[in-house]
Image 1 (cartoon, rainbow, N blue to C red):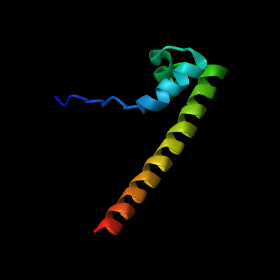
Image 2 (cartoon, rainbow, N blue to C red):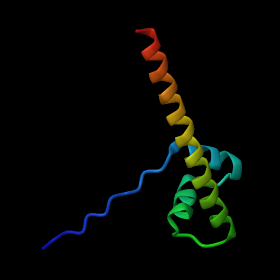
Image 3 (cartoon, one colour):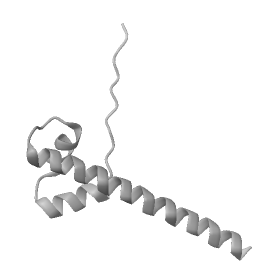
Length: 76
């Protein structure tokens, strides 16, 4: 028998914290909203906000990494 192994999605904890502080919902509710387990207008807003913030977070992280590589190359 093959067991179906389903991996848990990992969410950006910094973005979850921002959404929790802004809206006041629990982490569980926010994760379920992002995953699509909950339906409603607020859930859709949370999901859109998470995607937007996560993309912005990735861009900032990539820019920071590129800047650090550039600085490291200049120091040699």
